[in-house]
Amino acid sequence: MKEKPFGQLPRDQWPIGLSLPIATLSLEPFELEERCGVVFFEDIDDLDFFKAAIIVTGGGETYALVRYRGCPSPGTEVWVGQTHLGTSSDIQPLLNALRLTGDVVRWRHPNLSF
Image (cartoon, rainbow, N blue to C red; front, side):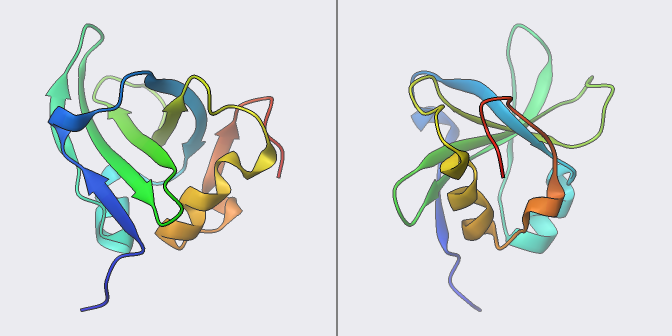
């Protein structure tokens, strides 16, 4: 089996401030599990139950992939830390690590461009 080009952190190592949505992928968690090998955990916060995965790319960038159970629109949100938002390259390391292309991005933060 091929080694994944990314690492994952367990739920108890969720980085402080990793809470800013920068994009929504068209893929659901089960699709990211099947296509990319991402392992999600389940949890609950003050909004709802959710599935999440904390991804660390080979370059050290950290992202959370989050899907709330009650969310009315399809897809999986991509979150970064509050200080991460900036250039168009913000989501590209994640896409590269997951071996995905920009066409899976349904929504992106207005400060991002591709």
